[in-house]
Image 1 (cartoon, helix red, strand yellow):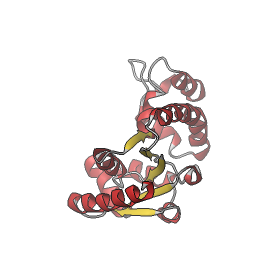
Image 2 (tube, helix red, strand yellow):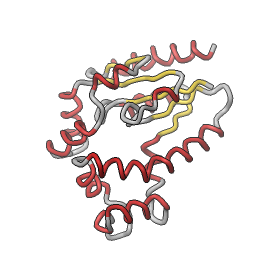
Image 3 (tube, one colour):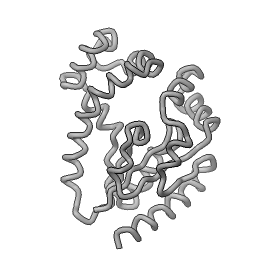
Length: 198
């Protein structure tokens, strides 16, 4: 089993690369998706968040109001650390179970947004960083996700710097260009990963 850590700043296109690797046969474990699942209504994660941040982070239907929680934690490193201390152990347990279910010869790609921030690079055989300029990322967050400029800038600032992520990279997927460019670079990366398992 080859364990690959895939990361990139918000708006870099990391999830698009993960989809393209999955289409080529990688087993993708999406930490973001798991992080959403462990805070669904009725979960231990959501109970912990309400205990830490109050019921104002809930929507009327009892689900987590991610935008409200984001506005609280992304401008306050202590509160962000508190949130991470609730969610990360739950995500870790779910990731371990998914890994145990993968075939022994699999290329397992862990889609981990906060790999650099949480010093997780040593957990992986190969680290891939999807890289785009801060200007490109900001444009995508405004245009594709409908964020306000202030919210987008706060989220970018809350993450590791571009330089810190690139320092951990074994492979870099540049993503300031077109989807065709991204497809070509993802194909090259997949070839490298397959050689690692040969």
